[in-house]
Image (cartoon, rainbow, N blue to C red; front, side, top):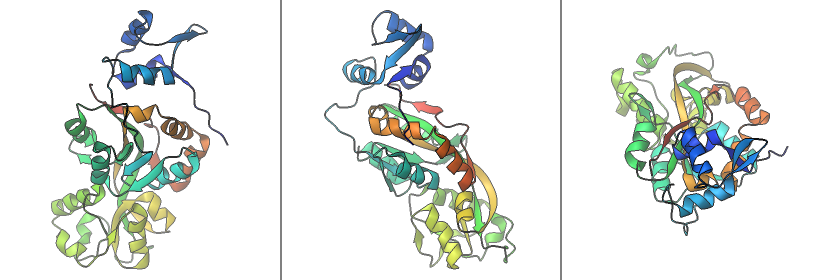
Length: 295
């Protein structure tokens, strides 16, 4: 099935991207300071024309025109995101090695965007992105919310009920820089569980899928992973939290055909059906912009 991308932005969509009120966008269009057109009385903005305008005007954030951002999404692994990349036909490729690695690759322009789920006292991702990218033309947009918790063997033979029961248990671990690993270490500390003992001798799982496989194989007795991965391996799952999973995108890349095709696919029934099939996903916030740089 082909998912068409509208060549035009609405006033609301453009206002979100530029961090302006819709009234201001109307004023810019009325004074011909921004390229626009009307169709059936509705104000529309051609994507290609807006991209050129952003590069040329000081009113919009710019990224050096000579830099071609690679069509790569870095950062945190997610099975639904991975599936969407493979089925969207967007041309975007995934290189998933943790949220911290993703931030580094986006900052150095080795990736056009990255996936994040960095825990903060007041939520997810926004404070970190604001602190590191406030002067840069990036957009933080929600991809999904997903259930994270303890993945355990089917039937729960060890009678694990929560984090307090993980003392003297072998836990699967992610690589340094994985946001889920950092969060687990904090939660273990809060519960009085020694992380050093829990992870002693454990090999590193480099993806959410690998975490579940560590439990499935018996190499670990529990993992702090996704409900979708527990279901995929027919393992039991104890919910701990719902986390927000975002995409941090260079604004230049936002208008590229690859990302637009990917976004269009994520609005499709096939994508929504896959989220239901995998389980543990909430797509109601998809597309909500949580941060938009001021320049």
